[in-house]
Amino acid sequence: MAVKFGRPLEARTHLAPVVTGAPADADRLDLAVRMRRNRRNDWTRRMVRENTLTTDDLIWPLFIMDGQNARSPVPSMPGVERLSVDQAVREAVRAAELKIPCLALFPYTDPKLRDETGSEALNADNLVCRTLRAIKKEVPDIGLLADVALDPFTSHGHDGLLKDGVILNDETVAVLVKQALVQAEAGCDIIAPSDMMDGRIGAIRKGLDAAGFTNVSIMSYAAKYASVFYGPFRDAVGSSKTLTGDKRSYQMDPANTDEAIREVALDVAEGADMLMVKPGLPYLDIIRRVKDTFAMPTYAYQVSGEYAMIQAAAQNGWLDGERAMWETLMAFKRAGADGMLTYFAPRVAQALKQG
Image (cartoon, rainbow, N blue to C red; front, top):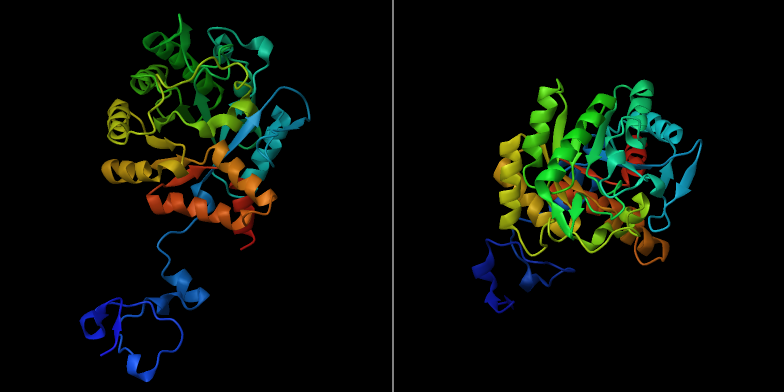
């Protein structure tokens, strides 16, 4: 009697063992189930594929800066540039042509405009608001998401008001509501608070509704972890050199999962329309738990550090960057994400358009 893996073959007929090469007649199995049948051809693999990536899954983050007809490379993010407002409009036109449904805007604020309270965030003519208006004028049907947090505007690089080394929660929330209203008035479709202050979703929802912006959505950075993977992003928005200390008193501990579910539950109760988990790849388990628990539109942010690692490894010939891009984005879909913010968005959309 032939034996593999220490068990009689007769005892394993309900399984599909790994078969390599052409076995001798004495070792042949009469298998009803062969998992490899569905993987044999490209067309069968496509037929049985459980998850599919489309342009509808993509949100494209753009970094914007002052200037005219200007682009500035972000050294730690190969292939990503800061864009002047007119160039951001050009990319919005391109996004619409590629059927990318939504853009996310992040400003590089002139250091001269940064102060302790992030007052530039409340300027109705700040860089974000000018970009929102310019894109909506040229490409009215594309969705626009704006980050609500003070770190691009504060001289200390934190997401909230700082006093004696402590981030003030309630005082910060009051400012964030005003920031959200300024953005909504400029044409923002999705307010995306990334600050991780307690109670800010409910306060922003109340403020938007009271001002007549009932149709403006909120995508909450509901589970945002204190992560090392944000480094290149902070370079892009100019906060890496200004940040004093760290953000562990308000961003989540990477060791925790149950806490993420509590955070999300609070944001859902306060009126969040969509949820985000950030970063993405190191937190696929959180994406899965959030989607299974709440069954709400759930997004992953493939953050700057994730993008930079793939690009750097590809440039050094250590891996196939194209395949790594597709595999990581599919991982988000497999984990339960309805979509993702990714710097690969135009590259993916172009490839999908070309079939």
